[in-house]
Image (cartoon, rainbow, N blue to C red; front, side, top):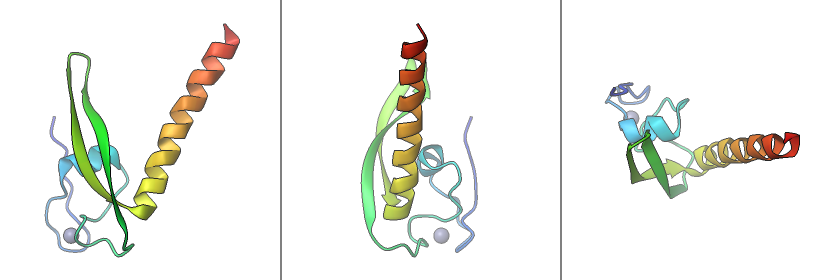
Length: 83
Ligand SMILES: [Zn+2]
């Protein structure tokens, strides 16, 4: 399933990999005004059909991305403690 969303800045289709990494993003990389950009390596797909790809995101989005990662880790810790 391909995710298609148009950038609110230029109305071009946003890179689907970017949307997968940042589900709430509304702009493409070019239209983002946050300045600094970071490159992350993220895993996509599920089960046997996974692949790693590089995604360019803004510094603000990177904070959001890192928070999402931290939330996941915290959930894992909670599950371990309950056992
Ligand atoms: Zn744009």
